Length: 249
Ligand SMILES: Cc1cc2nc3c(=O)[nH]c(=O)nc-3n(C[C@H](O)[C@H](O)[C@H](O)COP(=O)(O)OP(=O)(O)OC[C@H]3O[C@@H](n4cnc5c(N)ncnc54)[C@H](O)[C@@H]3O)c2cc1C
Ligand code: FES
Image (cartoon, helix red, strand yellow):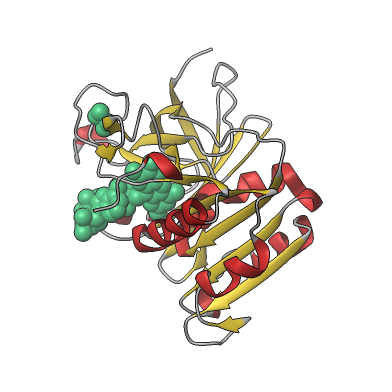
């Protein structure tokens, strides 16, 4: 088993505005990922750009890995432009997965947060409930699949084009209680609000955080986040953290 390998792109298609779903064929010696883990991809040829870019495991199957890639800069533009049949160097799976807790899973996703929690929804299936928020209907990736997989799905959009007009915080009171364990991924402001709500209401909660990453393996200490126990590396001690240990400034 190895964490460093070369993978062939077998599919690359638009999944939403500026977002591609990319499927990779993994070699036999690649390790199986768990929901919450991520991969570092060498997006360009000849190490340009030099640094690998981190992407969550969106979905996985026998020798297959799917990632969702939002085009935000040069690296993601190169990656989303790659044709099936091309190869990328990959490091992973990396980081901590979402822990299993014997409570009712409530999964909260905002926008691209679905890249991290889709596989968790798939794992819990009808046993989990989901609050899925986005700016508008166009930003709701794989909504039909999620509705099919999960026990219950509440949708919110900022503009009201799908589900309730508003954001995930407008639904959390209805869905979360002390018997729940909340798993959340999305924009930092959403994670901060979800975390504060859960801490205040004594609800166990785990959040998946993002930081710019250089090495992805704990060596450069460039991805730290402030916690009650000091600074921790998002790539090594995270990306999944207990919500009550994060210090939100
Ligand atoms: C653990 C982890 C998992 C991630 N999973 C996914 C995923 O599944 N799908 C996905 O599309 N993106 C994901 N990201 C973000 C993704 O890694 C960045 O968007 C990507 O590295 C940007 O590369 P670039 O060369 O296109 O952008 P750059 O040219 O490097 O930067 C362009 C813009 O994007 C911002 N940016 C760069 N890196 C990040 C980052 N890590 N987080 C937020 N903004 C960033 C920069 O500040 C800048 O404004 C993840 C990040 C982390 C840390
Ligand atoms: S990216 Fe280097 S320590 Fe996390």
